[in-house]
Image (tube, rainbow, N blue to C red; front, side):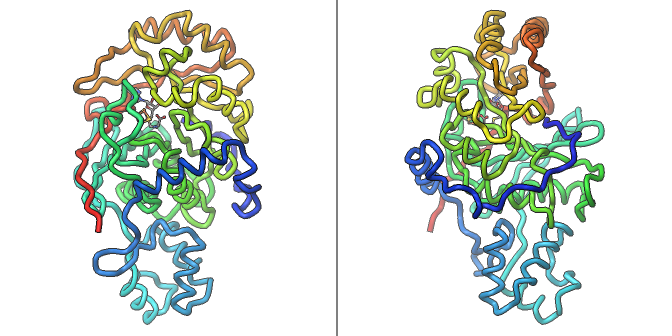
Length: 404
Ligand code: SAH
Ligand code: SF4
């Protein structure tokens, strides 16, 4: 979980003031990735009855909707406050808006949420929601409580294209990407469940204090929707979650990492899992495209990485596969010079998985090598294993996509 002892920074430059993405390396590759994401596009914001969902619209889109209704720009701001600060879902209760306009809005729009299809609670307090989306697709969202805070783990795709050998989600074909509305909607559902509306002022203590983008799917293969959703949750006039409280985990989509750092500046977690290309090719097949050296180069230049804001390297501990002391020493050598910490994740088994978790003593010895080399090295405590809610255990039944 990210270090959240510092005050929030709300100083991200607006997108318009950023250098054009074309100036970043890998522009062509990035264009190809974005074009591919569009092939798995989610349903748009219009419901069957013709009304449109306001959730997931950027501020600019919301302003454009209001302008099209002949309303002043401040209306968009009022609505934003109701939707993302107050958590209001019913136009009729928006007391700062005159009744005739409330009625016009209700006739044209909804403030949507994914539908909770099922809910489970682990013995350790972890909670998992199975959410049904408008087209019948399903995703899982997990809430992981800590003593004085907690993280919502959100999904970004239905399934995943990447088939990492140890990951349950990887056995589910990618059906489609999630929309910004569906991504931000997962956090809204969790907030509804814990009654954490309105958004507390400043950094007041709350249960849902962090977001980890570590659920189903590869977020950097659905970058634009993830970007829009995270901008919504970071917006200071709404949910106002600081970027320091958000961690995005990638299996290593190198061409998108620079852009993510520049446009979002959230904490980065990288799923490394192996120190040699031959093994990483097997465990994380994306390595064949973006091998370890390229991945680490992208980490070295990740905007905003510093000793105060380190990149997390996730390393799943697989018995007899990647957990030797030689592996640990090589890991320390590879990470030299990168502001890094290592998160050791005991492998979480799932039905049909072919790996075993390294024994605790092996994990401890591995951690000691990294500690001696100067890297913080927390071992991730498995949470929610009994309800298949731990890292890498999420999977839903895919439905055929109905388009039309
Ligand atoms: N697709 C992204 C984010 C989702 S996976 C990524 O791969 O980074 C979140 C984390 O859980 C990743 O580090 C992933 O490698 C890890 N993970 C996947 N399956 C796991 C399992 N069975 N046990 C432990 N960690 C696992
Ligand atoms: Fe996809 Fe991440 Fe699972 Fe790999 S670990 S299959 S990238 S969700």
